[in-house]
Image 1 (cartoon, rainbow over the protein chains, first blue to last red):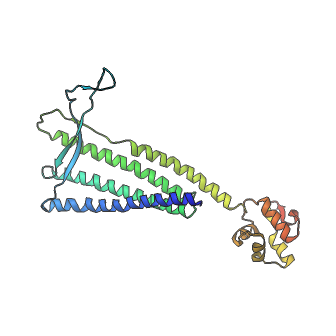
Image 2 (spheres, chains in turn yellow, orange):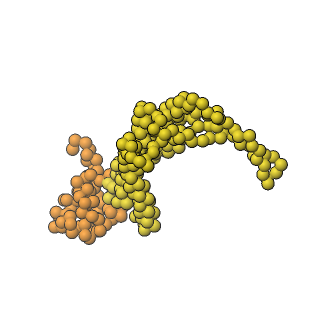
Image 3 (cartoon, rainbow over the protein chains, first blue to last red):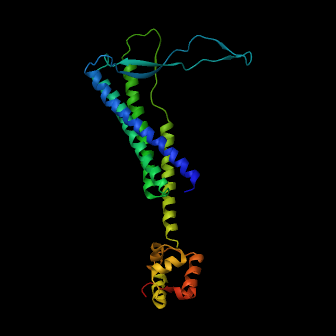
Length: 207
Length: 70
């Protein structure tokens, strides 16, 4: 591998490995903090964050760019629901969402590390890497499903639990489509790398 | 059967080992083994040239076409 590409791959590997070890720390927090909360350890307060919409504030925004106004719309806020108030099933769903999210991202980073390891060994186009890309794509699609479904359950439940509010709150369901797009790109790349692996195998048998 | 590489016959005739040939033409022993056992998908002209040079033969001496079943 040329020296410059080797340096780039090495740098990427360091970043991915750093993210991987950080994710393990997050995983430990996801396990430990809820336990500490349930045990009533002082200073540990868990809550679920639910995104809500707010009424458009009555405000006029002018600018230096002309006589027109900037329009304010789609005001949002994060509603913090303390676990101390929430029912048991709500806490369980939130914990499951966090745990599954972290687990999926941990697996994704593990696969990415394996991918870079093979690239550094000079085997970029291998069947192993094609399979890794496919698994990463599927993991991201699963991550989106978990985040969207469980997040929506929490958002709806939290919103329905509101008895009264000084402002009208709207519910935000679903989730970001970014994991879906990236997941699909990875699935396509998996096919490309699979074809590359076949070509590489063919090339290796050209003496 | 297809194209057969008669490398072992040529080496025997010249009293040369595969290892010696590998060192002379700069192709790894593993790759020469792939060639010798007819597992290769293709051969480069440069490889064919190097083999003919070291073994003192023509390409036709190294390559033969055999139909399936012969």
